[in-house]
Image (cartoon, rainbow, N blue to C red; front, side):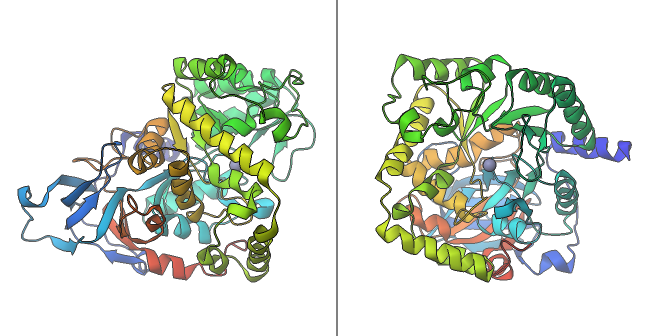
Length: 468
Ligand SMILES: [Zn+2]
């Protein structure tokens, strides 16, 4: 058992598997529209993930699991044996990397059937689960997807939440001290998880012990903080921080050590200036210690129903009772008095822009936990929200792809559309650079060179989200 585990871990580090010929089982073929040794996408607009301006009329050639070449149509030679896809009027972006993409929806129920297909169909080809409610289910699902037995994204499995003493919700184990923190990290690292997420009530001492134990095993730690401030966590050696501003309590005058303050967001952040020395100091320390941040604007937006666009696809994906309550939620937006929350959302956007301006590395994730924020569609909403925050469309894509790859340590083989990178890319109908909402028109999602049919994946999970 141990030997197998090590082999899987080694593969994950080494990068893509170079299968010669592959035979896909029916369970996967049902959702595949392109499976050819050589594929050429011609005349397509390209956003390559590097942040550089989009290029028109490009040809992308995929050979096996890798991107073979990328260039202007006139300069490219399309191999005679290539399956040619005319990309006129369409756009290609890298497969999205969701850094806060749980495998559970409301009630912390594991969505092992609907979420993998929903992520993939929406163009999210890699997820980090960032707080797991069932790490064994995630590890098993990951192995099935890696072996091409079922469709889904590449999964970076996180251990169960590292939560402080007291009442942890649902599947969380409340830590009883530093030895307990080390024991938990040790156990799950040996089982094969590669990240942990610390949570809102953890103490500095327990967090320090968990980080130390994880790093001894080459495993990383991120956190949704509250009891510990960003700068404190950076000093303890944390690798990443989730959610951005609304989980950083260090600017609040009433903050007590190791205690999550019970103050309204408007009290804690209302008057905060993201250019103040205090905030800039946080950014400086994060940058100096290479601590990246994950933007999850779509889940912050849930507090402002008045500005959330109704998405029929979300209503279709949810099981009937959940769908009815989200329909009500959309309806409530028409009369919601949520200007205070809207202002806090704006402040979060400013915080993220200022972090990047200060040299910070920003990734993104959807936190598909609740109400209308569900797998894949939440990530697509993030694209619009990052543009609203002031990033260019090309930067927003970079945050959602290449930056994610960098944070996960995958950037040598994943996250951009360049020769020799793994062929994880998304063909979109329309032009999301000009019309951000076009990001929803995913047509074919390539993962490891296999083209999955977005519509079929979407169709197959109708009514399932919230159930399984
Ligand atoms: Zn979360």
